[in-house]
Image (tube, rainbow over all chains, first blue to last red):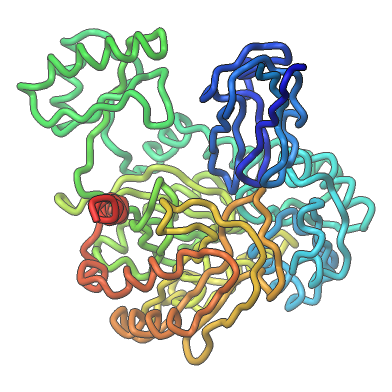
Length: 82
Length: 455
């Protein structure tokens, strides 16, 4: 049985999957991630904070769309860790 | 004059505009995103129309939704406030194409002043000094040295293709120039794929000054200057009038230059021309014009007695400028501080959330512009400005005492704010003596962070 891990947003705000509008996404569904990799940005009051994966593995899927509002503690993506 | 105004903004400025409109006897329409359903502007306006989800790109920046809201509510004019669409020439055009009035300058003025190169050229044509600089795109050393000599040291080297403060180097004298130029060229090539550099005079101890103007499309008057040097990350947090650093002669030359440039562009509405003031040489240089009402406009309102928002609405309604220059006088001194939802003890980390209680300062010479009320939830999606505390008194020293007293009365609980930073600033010797430049606050904050780290 594979273990699954949710990466949570520490902050409320707008979630972005790419570093800039014209840049590719940090990660796609199915990509491998290492612990500490940047997986997205949260914009809170015009300040940007990176979200890092707090576990390594393979991305099952993103749970939040690009430019969608998020709440603190909301799951942003699902990682298969084992 | 129209009788119904739509406010295409949020926060304290939406409240400010609704107040001015009500005093003019106009009906008001607020627009709101899902995050602002319970805002003070929505509560105060005669009508409120939803324009989209929380992200600004889908609501307050959605031109189509805002014009639809105006049609739906039969508003005849739109006030853009500051930020969002206020300096968007396409929006101004779309408003006029829809048969509505844009409360602001003509689209072509917004476009002219929004283009740095065109704005510099307009300033030169109006005989307004600009920061001495080179033609863009110097690649040869001989040309660069000639330009640096003409501009005068210290000079700043900037990548022509750069932006956002990246790739900037300061060279203090000619001896260091060749080496720095080569290095900056290599860096620009590596970072931007283009090694061309632009040279500009580096102002060591610059102050940020700005001049408020009002125009009716033909005639322009100034409402004197504001001093806004206390900034962090290019965000002003403290503004005052008059500017303590300049004498009457400089003030006259500065304000006259602003009128010349605004009049040349046939300026309509309220606008602000920003300048850098070199304390070492006493020179001032135009940097850019903001073609909208500004956050810090109340400072000017308190020292001149002019309601700038009311005047800009009247002008948009087709009235001629009612003021003539000799009637406009600056009386006493005013200071504004911005209370932001940021935590000064945590590197100004944003602090959205629920405001549990609010006590505003009152008494003589104190004005509060804010959208807060007890129980209001500050959303995380927009800027962090919560309130502006503005004080007015006969002299700058009395205004400072009044500010300290007002900040002691102020109480906002539930979220972190920058109020404590302002209390500290208002008590500092440097601030009391007005001995600061645009780098002062950043240095102060960094020094404090260092002390905190080593403690």
